[in-house]
Amino acid sequence: MRIENELKLGFKDVMIRPKRSTLKSRSQVTLDREFTFLNSKKTWKGVPIMAANMDTVGTFEMATALAEHNVFTAIHKHYSFEQWKDFVTNANEQTIRNIAVSTGTGKSDAEKTTKILTAFPQIDFICIDVANGYSEHFVSFVKKMREKHPDKTIIAGNVVTGEMVEELLLAGADIIKVGIGPGSVCTTRVKTGVGYPQLSAIIECADAAHGLGGQIISDGGCKTPGDVAKAFGGGADFVMLGGMLAGHEQSGGNLIEKDGEKFKIFYGMSSETAMNKHVGGVANYRASEGKTVEIPYRGNVHNTVNDILGGVRSTCTYVGASRLKELTKRTTFIRVQEQENQVYS
Ligand code: 5GP
Image 1 (tube, protein in one colour):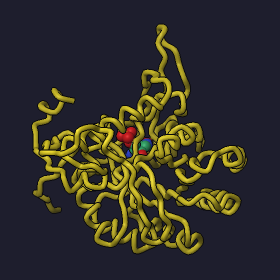
Image 2 (image 1 turned 180 degrees about the vertical axis):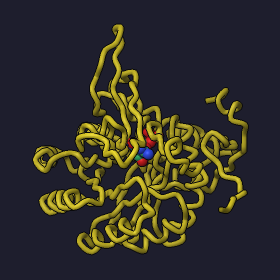
Image 3 (image 1 turned 90 degrees about the vertical axis):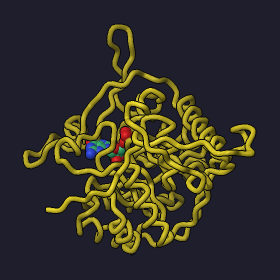
Image 4 (image 1 turned 120 degrees about the horizontal axis):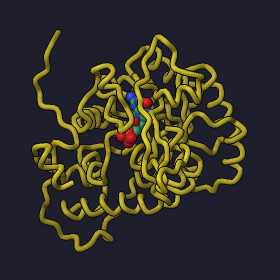
């Protein structure tokens, strides 16, 4: 056993210090970023925020709405090939540029992904998502996908430490998904004791990825636009959102009514709800590591997206960053007590 004493931080442990700035208004800030990826060599330009590949969030309807803002969607892996066909046939170019096909490491997932990418070569991104990105099987799956799809941009995760970020990039991934345990409907930390404070994970993993020319996604734990700004400030190239985009018209999950109020069901992808829906129940050797919640219905996602983008633009004006790309360089985090942050959040 070993104890690591170095300080590790979550979003709630910091605030961003304002800096002298020449910017007069948020309208002077651009949130677009352009990346050319390490292994695929493909270029993507857009607002680097992503809807999570959860069946309550990463839906075709969400992708269509978010693409209007140049925001990205990792489409969840539970759509059939036929559903993909209908969607791609009707989607515009902007939407197609801003989506990923998600897969686990199982044989049937991999076959379906290859079938989708073969039928629709215009899709550039694959999101290989497992709860625990530390297994050898996962690394060899990433290598196989790289061999099979040399020109696709591969997102792989989730991990939280620099050495694993490097290993996955060297195995052929382009963008590494970072986050174990911070998700709003995730119970991994409670069920297993495993996790890593998200802001420190971002800072350490971004450093490792950027050293090799790769990118990272901060995945999970953002509850407010301020958290999204902190993730970018810490060095995240992309920020993935589940809970903040749940509960909308474009989100999946049943709409229910209670005492005249509307709610949408939102659940973790390894919750009992998800496992009952997709794999016929929770296998008895494992525990569910996700929960199910009811979110007050929030209507059209466009308002929420504008709120998030407006918040991040405002952060940029507070620190004098005219482009999102400059935010990390201009960020100084101040450590605060949790209570302090709650007062202001
Ligand atoms: P949020 O933005 O809601 O805080 O976090 C979204 C992220 O939580 C997802 O992108 C995914 O990485 C993670 N997640 C989703 N469902 C589950 C689950 O059932 N268990 C765990 N451990 N994590 C989940």
